[in-house]
Length: 319
Image (tube, rainbow, N blue to C red; front, side):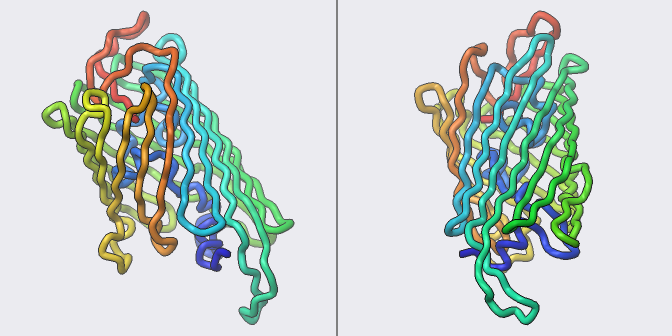
């Protein structure tokens, strides 16, 4: 059974942002790197992380993840990415959250029973290269939350950009959750509008370092940093760790730190991430990502052959 703390984290509370389930981690690489992946995403998670990454796809990919953290909860994510002709890419994503049983209380804080609910987000996204190594992207999203027999809906959008000036440097920017308020009964809360600006550097062809600044409605600015080693494409595995300063005021000595592991199995990616979720405690994210029908896959920062329309000479691959 979830406490009122968990219910507020999912649906929002008075004076806070709504649709807080959108902030739950779903991308194992981003989660393990402290949330710093705006500059490097280019796979089945890009529709939600940064739609500009869809312009740098090696081939189609299908990503599925499951987040485990509180008893009876279920947060599932499914993402798809498809490269299109001429430096373009299409992406779609579905997120479905069930919080389990939530305690119902009256005005005197007395327990009067339990109720259930769910939250859903459906996303469509498009990315396009506008220059050799610069891409932009847009996304549109439909949201729905239901608590007992009360439901609310909202629409939102997002935008992003990526610039890859060399084979070992990349920059990215994104804004997400631009939309109307999510209203349940007489409570209407704004969506968790978030802006991100980050960069990544591949050191010695083996260590990827990512940094990112984030401004989120309701919590202000935060800093994020992540490290990934070795090169998964060369070694078949990669260790990841990161830090998210948004949790710096938490009491736990591990608050803000994250870690993860990626392994290549039969040409596909299996990943795990261990991440903090503030007052919800620690979470475990398990994911698998399938790739097929595309060109030979590349490492995090590596040259690739130009396509028929663009002389693209860099490629970030988000595993």
